[in-house]
Image (cartoon, rainbow over all chains, first blue to last red; front, side, top):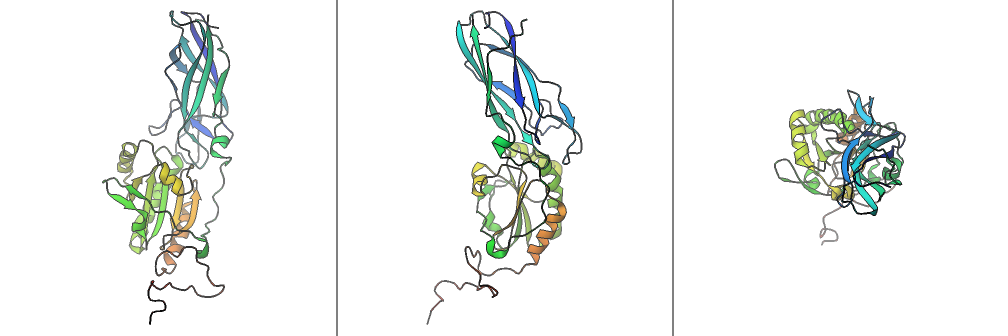
Length: 122
Length: 208
């Protein structure tokens, strides 16, 4: 339940399968595709900052320098403002989390994962 | 500011790695092993554009040994292999060998051209797409590299970073193999222990 005019935040949990890594939101090389969340139009909440955790710097066989990545389980925080004029009742914020994954010897095309956040405006 | 957990957060389709791509953890490169001639299938032909806008067909390369490399600028393992491929191009191009790179960046030439110029890639690059990948049975992992014999048949495929030595050995084997006559001989069974027949052009068989 959220109140009109309030600033709120939520945690989104992510799980990267063992053996794989995804580039962080601030990759260490220009050509790398960053982790990025984009909200789709339609929800009542006003999106604010997306706060990712501190990435890991990992060295891989195929890279001269450590790469800024996420592995395993991690959370990131999404922030919103509830507009004063927001309609009462339930709603959903829909988003796309774009990621690009590799393992130790291969990389995979960038993909989008659906993000779905339910809320109720009082 | 209140920090409220909002309802249930559901991430659909966000099982990275195994579920999306298939469970294929990093594996050691296998020893180079070309398919026996009788087990090779014709490489699919494609028509893609190079950096100059010219159409390039894989069939243009028939008669040559081809290293066909699917790669992308965001792929670190791919970039390890590219200098090797440049060496192979330099060393073997006069022996009937060519490297052909198929870039799979979504951004196409906007991503590829700067990289190609920076690195000084000395072999032809074309930009591929999902249709190209589908023609080759679906390509998800990059790099995926095919070795194609002079008859246009796929002699080997490597998925993921492979050693330079494996490629070199395979290329040399293919370059040393006798050239086939008559083009692609798809689906033919070779007589056990006997020489392969060279197909005669239609119209000559039984001519009197």
